[in-house]
Length: 195
Image 1: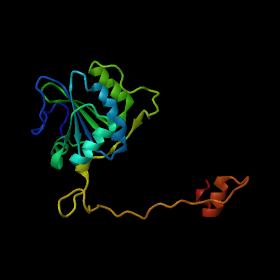
Image 2: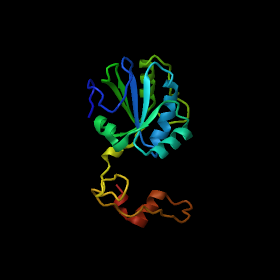
Image 3: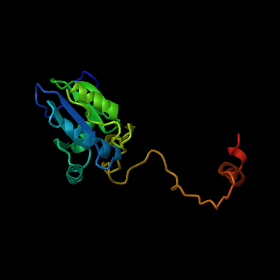
Image 4: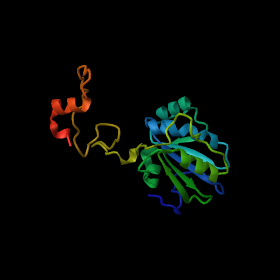
């Protein structure tokens, strides 16, 4: 994992003498879909902003088109950059100094963190408090952490480390009139719910 103060790995082309902001994301991650458009306002800042997609070219191209991403995005082939930086979840942002050393990391969607980052870059707030989006939202697990299948591909027939149960079902309750829902559930499903 690239820690604060370490230098960026080979395979990432950075403009020397300029701070960089790397944004690791997945195209099917709802938090990434929420967070990345906020970064468009940093595309004209005095930093090099690079999106790093953990998905294929076609999915990435469509993601960039649909969300109107205004900064360069590259595909992380064989997830080499993801393995080097080791983000535990996406989106994860790494602010690098002029020499490629990690100065700051921001994980998930965090309005306060985005605004602090923008201020550090000499920009105004980029995540308005009352724009309808939550103040904070966790991301999805990074693709480089997903188990690989026997043929080496992370996207086909994975070997899960644990088994999963059947799908959840919905319980439909009869009209309760004036009955208390908690008392009804205690009668119907047992008194283990009662204190």
